[in-house]
Image (tube, rainbow, N blue to C red; front, side, top):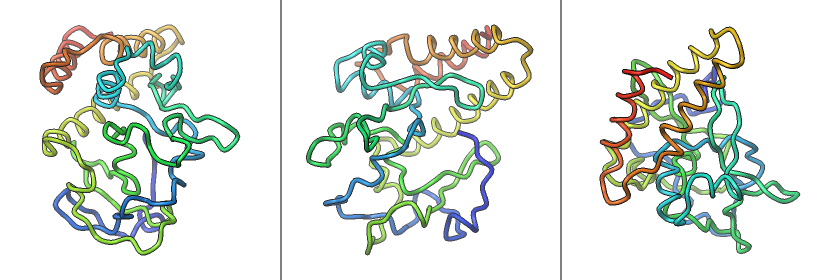
Length: 220
């Protein structure tokens, strides 16, 4: 999601790398699940998020759309996000005990919280959102450890590349004249990166980069 932000108002004013220490560690968030409620459509999923969910839950993307995911327009492009449920609008994957039922494969958005990403020059750095997490007495932890993803450097590269890949298409969508062209672009992204299954026994990253290359060669 593209946002114009004033870092001085929402952060400690610093930008971090994955090797830096930041005060994000809630020691398991025991007794707290504030960030799992009232998030609306903001927990947007990238192809890696959906790949992990389909493998972990043994469901196709279409099956996930039937009960736990939904589609919404994000800066001109239709993308999937986690559903909220109930009067308190809690995450569909929040258990009755207030714990995440998919913590092992939780989306990148959830892994990142309460950090944000500041994108520039086809890469990004992290910033600490100081008003988002109400848990007191957080301790410092290295961002790389906090994110808890395998092949962290490759994950960061993919995250940046996917952001800028989408941004190019979002910019194109804003310039299209006619809803049909925008719909065609959105459907191409959904089919190419979310609906078409990935080989589960193969490395995800080469597969998604091949699809990005093919999309660049052929267009929507």
